[in-house]
Amino acid sequence: MPRWNLIEQMRKGHIPGLSMAFIEDGVLKRQDCYGETEAGSSRAVQRDTMFNACSISKLAAGILAMILVEERVLRLDEDISPLLVSWSIPEHPAYSRSVTLRRLLSHQAGFADPKGGFGEYSCEHGVPELPQLLAGTTYYAPEPAALTVEPGSEFIYSDTGFSILQLLIEDVAGEKFSELLRQRVFEPLHMNHSCIIMNESQIRPEFACGHDQHGIRLQEPYTIYPYPAAAGLWSTPTDLAVLMAELLASLRGEGKLGITADTASEMIRSQGDFRWAGLGIFLDSSNQGVEISSLGWGSGFQSLAVAYPGTGNGAVLMMNIDPGIHQSESLLGQISALWQQGQFA
Image (cartoon, rainbow, N blue to C red; front, top):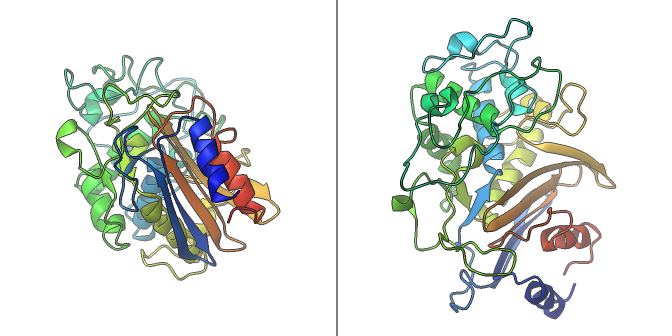
């Protein structure tokens, strides 16, 4: 896709800004930026422009969890109920299997999100405390978190599950999740343009504004999801490419965060009966071997991170628009497909 054609596709899609980073042979090799941080503003998207990563937060949460597994603070297949201090999983008389870290990370713990729950931050209602969020007593979750199916029996994509994961990490470590993520992941990898955002006071000048599918800036342009592990991350393609490269390096036994090759391999192994479910990531097959991916999609933003352990290649794409269609159909999916075919130059 020549440069002029990419610009034309952005124009047709009303896409204000686009930022991309590419990994080759396990190393960050290329970064491209196009468009504006806000439609009509003339403020160009740059390498340090931060986008709402939405559910790519779950990849970062998975990495942090596996660090704690390596340190034996957590175990993948241990019942987490005795470890939770701030909130307890309601017992269900019909279910006998345990809620484990493995099942939380692979969306198989048995929790479904409440209808209308896990929406955007509201200044009026403030930042929810996790125990109250899971108890169903906040504006953000109108029902208490509870098992809806036998743990391990079904795949149910769940922000609730990752909020429980966050509470588990905070309870066993005795520190806030956002601080642990900064200390244990962002700082060692020099991810200097990544942070958890919980309210409007934390907004930075380098943030991109979100836009609707028509390219119109949102009334509240900096979408905040006050659920750090599930969707609270703001970042850049460059930083997220560094994180993906770290996972690729860990698979070779060469990572910087202390995750061994065996543990990293567990992350990219199909979990349970669901071939697409890894630990904190999704899996697929491709002509480059196993594909690992993480997707982010929320109000005003969409992103895609993909990598191929067999080749050491990967890409992270982020744009400041909610196109109203899945990544596989949006410009991000088009670019990813062309890149995989060696046709994106």
